[in-house]
Amino acid sequence: MNTQIRAIFAALLATAVSTPIMADSDDVDISALKAQIETLQERVAALEARDTFTSFMPNFAERFHVMHRAGEAGDWAVASHELEEMKRMSVLSTSIDAKKGKLLTGMMGPSFGVLEDAIEHGDFQKFENALTQTVSTCNACHEATGSAFVEVTVNARDSMSLRHPHRLMPRSTEDGHHHGKPAAMGDMMGSGTMEQPAHEHN
Image (tube, rainbow, N blue to C red):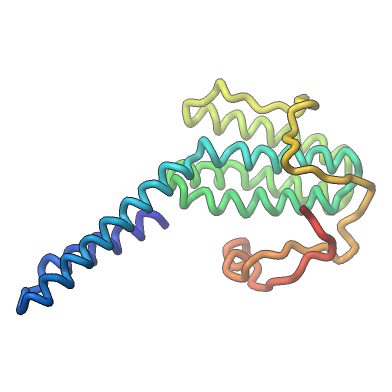
């Protein structure tokens, strides 16, 4: 996405520079346009510097740990919600870093499927096995990107962030729970419908 924005700016700039200057007013307009493009390019560069995989992964990991805790509590509604957020974020990761994002979505796909099956059936043993498989996948991905020292574990009981608190209780996913998201994002995830969640989730 950022690459496309940069390409558009570059095309606008090239057009502005190549446009014949017929009058002083045209010269002023082109100068103003160039200044605006340069400002926008600086803003895009600042956003790209802020949104990196280094800042993205803690948010992704937090969803994983909340899902883990929810499954332990038998709160399959919250576990399902967090899994859907992980899937959504994996798609968005390609706009942050196309290469790493593609690797993430490719490697996590099978784990997402196993987790989803366990959560939908409320099968705690399958869920535990799926968590172990997912952690192995995460660590393999870290190794592939040269970050093997960043090791994920399911035993980090005291490491869940307090910025995303949940009240967990035994609940199933069969109570009409849906994942509200923009229609365009629904298309990316394979669903073109937009539905409101059946419960509030902070």
